[in-house]
Image (cartoon, rainbow, N blue to C red):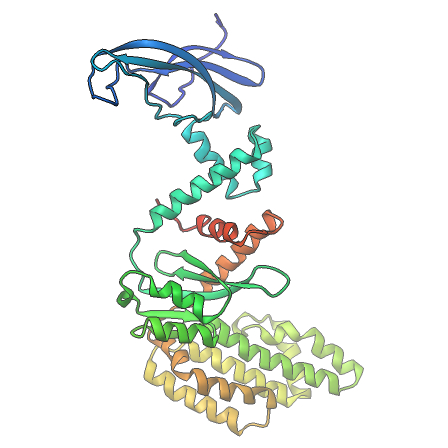
Length: 398
């Protein structure tokens, strides 16, 4: 008997500890269930007696950074009423399982944050067990998510899943801040199939997206009562793109010395005026003196940023009309494309002033998805990839 050890709670009150020993790299603990009798599963009688018992080794979560091996006394009982022999229930481990439920849950949760191989090596288990635990954890999480209410605000955005320009689409709950679904491709049909099956679609008030026509058509068909909102950051990106095209054109038209100044200022031009340092403001002043067209384009960009800070829908409509007229009457070809964009998406862009929602959360999830893909060095099975994304929701609540 060891006389140089202390007792540490195992955390399994259903089990009675019969013996324990601490070795150099693990704990050996012999346990059995505290119950003396159990009802017969055939006739329900409590008139039973112990028939025989065997011992099974099962793995549990680490204790003090050492592996814990539980040797369970597995008892069989004989019913005195019907004569049937049966094995006592095993709630801690499960039928024919060689590890505890809490250990398997731990493996599944850990493997959602790092690679399967790393978790298997760390816990000294097989990779097959870790994969099973991941599947069980995803099923548990996704099963719990099905009871959620349909959100008032939804975000839709596509993301690349391979270098071959293969895309999937993430549909997010902007209220609970979680991914609702990942559908194949970036077309209208798959998004429609999902939106058609959501419960109580009338609850959805608005859907935010980039200016991708298939997404707009899918929402208009499946959620006709919901407003489509163009993500403001995506629209500002279009304006920044027009400004950068102008800078690139001017850079190619002038001699080398001026070209270098334009190239060095490419990020400064796109930065918001309120975040510019004094030396950056001085650099822009010098560029605007040399390139009046660049100054005009920069002022367009800042005017749209200031426009988004407005709070009134009617005022926003008037200001947008003025900006459209200014762009239409101007000679900058890079900004002429914005006139067509505004004509095609005018109502959806203005809807931002009805519902102040953006796709910032969805874009953040896209970065999370890229991390998941890198951790696994890519996925060959797209179904597994989609399940992994859904199960790894940061905003998930049980």
